[in-house]
Image (cartoon, rainbow, N blue to C red; front, side):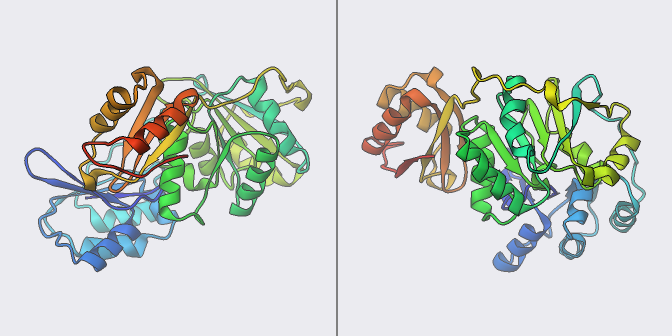
Length: 354
């Protein structure tokens, strides 16, 4: 069983070849799963707490202890955390028995993540976003705001500027959060605006620009935010826009990072010839694992059935009851119409463009 911090997905159950099962989810979701289905976890022999610091930040301490009460006392327990503060030490002492402590050096170094800081007025920050994107020729951008309201406001403003934008925060229903992450990760939308719900637990390799529209509340959140870029051995850029009200927060960041140097905002020049755009859009299929739909079935229906070139098909994500397929924009209409009129694995499914 794995309890996860970061983006809160529904509990997922996967079967292994030798008959064992893996249960993955946030503490709240798994606890709900226990109460509603009366599932028996008496045979669980391993408990993994991933991003434990984030789970505690989200207030899951009591949920974690309740879940552990339903597990066998004799098991292997593993705890992973980006920080090791007093609350993590307390949790470790309660659930781990003579644990082996392993500390890893930071994965991201200054020569991998290039940080830039700019002084900006609150009123002018939104207008800077297109210039930051075009001047850096960015293709996948994650923008962090401190509040859900600001996320929604900024999303509306950027859409008015002609940009394709997705929004992620805790007010969204779980299915909408799942969909948003899939659409961003499969390159159907180039910009995601999010609260710190996405600062941990969001693992997308090709984000080349992170923008801190609002300065993070503390240096640890800042660290997690900028860590969303420069993944899988790639370089990345993290830009922070600071106002005169952010001095205290910036002092905390300066204590942790020795590369904090403010640059002249006038050097950011909007390249009017560059337009950030998504190569793909996504098809939504009302059928998934529970209907025995597999990626190969969808791929075959699109290529052999509809006549879509396999090179025009991107990532295929299959959930329990729905599936998402990234399709190049120029053939998306053909793909949707073809699947509506054809069959997948001998069955008709409702199909929509996302």
